[in-house]
Structure formats: structure tokens, C-alpha cells
Length: 410
Image (cartoon, rainbow, N blue to C red):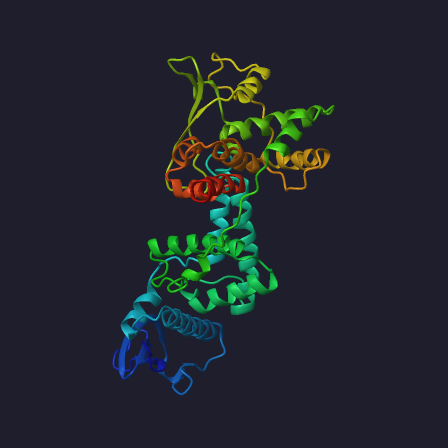
């Protein structure tokens, strides 16, 4: 709603002279012909007041302090008026004065995100992963640059955060940072988490992401997975360096179980059970990570290679609270997997998560395991999620089309 010009007037109330001979100072705010006024808990001698400038004429310390107080109050009023304009709220003189004299804390974007990052650091490896933390840190760094460019300030209140700034931030990420659509979506998701928090806590009134659904559009990408031939290359490769031997084993274990890194690294004897046929299963609630909406359970019958790896590392039912496998950090795993890929002549970007994709595609779907069963083993809450991780292989498409050919053209 468009607002009229705001007028600010400080003046002494001549009809209410105090015992010390001074008159109380009033502040009057006028908008669109409507005004409200309030005493500012300061007084002045009438002969010291300059009515045209709305301040004290004196140069003594008391007069200078009074003028400084008035200047600060005027500046604060202008700032509140600007914030409410950005919020597109209805502005009245009374609302401005209430906000001026309130004791509410001022919540700012970058300070709130910095605090969120610190909280995430404390949750690291508990229910938050390093990759998600890095994403928030990268978003924070980008926001600092964008805020400085757009507002020429070090930080902004949530009231100042507008849709126009979101548009500028998008351009900065696309043009200056050269981010892909999917990476840009991750940055915007981090920022939206901050604005959602602000909206819940009444730190802002209007959602700046209204009508910006396109910012959260994801481009479908094919997950990286190993073919059976590539998997065999790693299995059959002999390493003399012990750390590569360990990482190879842990990677293959994930390939044959579909466990994500955080689930494999926290796997203990309590998660391994035997059914009525004495077959060994993994039954484990997936670790909630980075804003996951719900926790799901993965149920995976152990294939012989996975069971052999557990036995190699002396898994025992008695060690209930001890990790079954001495898996190094995610960063080290990924670094060493790069070495393994090079030594095996595999040109794909080998990471721990490639193992999960490999289980979903090469190990299960390519061998006609149903999508529903793959979904349960991966611990997904919906087969829609599984479809993203486990694309239908060309091999399956060819087999289906060969059936069509036999049925129609034999």
C-alpha cells in the first residue's frame, strides 16, 4: 500500500512548563494528514529552543546531548518507516511511535545464518552432515557479497529482505558464481530456511519467496553408478597400501548393501539380525540428516560379499555398541576412492554415494528386483525417491524391447 510523506516534528509543550522552568519536548509524527504525538522524556528552556530547526540552540554539553538524542530518534524513525515500507505494511503514526519505543530485538539475516551454522557444527556427524554444513557456509559467503552490493551494508534486518533482493541474489549466483540450476536451488533452500524461521518468529511479515517457485526447480540428472564390469575391476584389484585395501572393502560393502556413508559408519551388531532361516539382515533406522522430514528403516538381506567383509573385520554379535567396520571420515573415503578409480582405470567421479547408486541399479534393478523392494532396502519413504536414485538401465530397456519385438514381429 502506498504511503504518503512522513513529517517529523519536535517541539516544546509551552502550556506545560515544569517546576524547573523548562517545557517538556513532544515528538509529533504526521502521515497523510493524520498525526500522533508523544513526550520524549526530555525538556528544554523555551528561550533555548530553535523552532525552525527543531533542536536546541545551545553549544554546552547538555544542549549537545539533547540534540544528539533528537537526531538519533529522528534517524530511528526514518529507519522504522523504511522497514515498514519494505514490508508493504499499513503505516500509521501510532504504529511508528509504538515501534520506536518498543524494546524488541532486531534480528538480522547474516547474524541469524551465522548462528544457524554454529548450531549445525555442534550437530555434525549426529544428525547433520559435512556436505550440508559446507552448503550453508558457501551460501553465507555469497549472501555477504550480495547484501553489500544491494544494500551497501554489512547486514540487514529481515524486514529489509525483499523479493527484489532475492532476484539480485539469483543473478549473482548465476552470473558471478556461475552456479548450475541444481546448485542454485540448494543455495536458495538454505536462504529460505532462514526466512521461514524469521516468519515463524515474527521477525518479518511477508515471505520474499512468494511467486518464486522457479528458483527451486531441479533439473533431473542421471546418478553416477558403476557397471558390473567396473565393479569387478575394483573387486579384483589387489592393493599393497593398507588404507586403500580398507577403503576398497568399505566401498564394496556399501555397493552390496546400499547403505549411505553415515549409516554404514554407524552400523553395529544391534542392527544385524538373523531370520528364521538363519539369513543375516541389516535392519537399521536411517540417520536423519540435514532437515530430513522423517526417519525410515532400511531392511537389507546381506549378500555373500557383504557378509564376507563383515567377517573379515571380525564382526561379533557381542559387540553391540561398537561399529562393525572401522570406516574413516567421508572426506578421506572420497579422497582415497579417487586414487582407487585412477588405479582401476575408472574415469567416473568415484565417491561413497556412488556405491549406493550402484546397489540401486547394477546390483538390484538390473537383476529384476522390484522398485518397491529396492525402495525398502534403501530406506526410502516413497518409490518416487527411489526412481531418482535408481534409473532404469539401458540393459533393462533393451530386454523389455526385445520382448516387444518377439511378441509383435516373430
